[in-house]
Length: 312
Image (cartoon, rainbow, N blue to C red; front, side, top):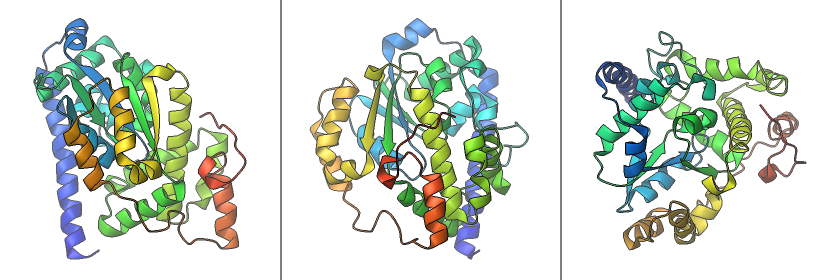
């Protein structure tokens, strides 16, 4: 690994470790915030999507709005809410981090902790809170139990483009799969509980196919969880459409978030979001690749394969 990558790896793991330590302190000192009082001051919007699907740029664009407070990957807030949500830091094994959490993991204390940490973080500066953490795409049932009135924005990108981007991230700094591959092992552990996913694990021969498996698990879980959420509380955005028509998509997003159209946010999106001229599908086309793509992308409209719903 190049020295620059080693420095980033060390910095990243120190940062994630700090997040967990900060969360531990919060668990001890966070005050109680009443649910009614919290809902009177804030509305919650969660940005969902497999990592490398465009969640960051979408949440950044929303964060330019004068009424929206952007929380970009607030891992410390979530680990403080429930320690098992850590699957990246050097402490992940110690706190027994899990990929999947659901409504059964939510207690009144869980909700109170999250409300308290959000209230402290935002300080009532803006009435709409946009929370973006890609790992939460595996846990929408948990989020919905913590914030029953929240809205969800799911951004979807071509799975092969997602996997290629993950592969590039691993090559750049080696942090994608968590400390000592803990995140990857968590993905495998979950996949082995689902017959249709378990049969895909042997095909994870490199980081590209690991990335496809992460995308597949994300897709299955978020679709299953969102099927239990009222249609008016969810919105799906195509990454490709967002890149080609950022202002149009932003107007729809602001309407969905129940905020007025903000010229500053629209101008930011128009200047920062551009179509990617590179091929989204990548160049893998050997018989092996075609076979694995057919297995892993089953049911995805962008794959060109027959559609079917795999409920995790």
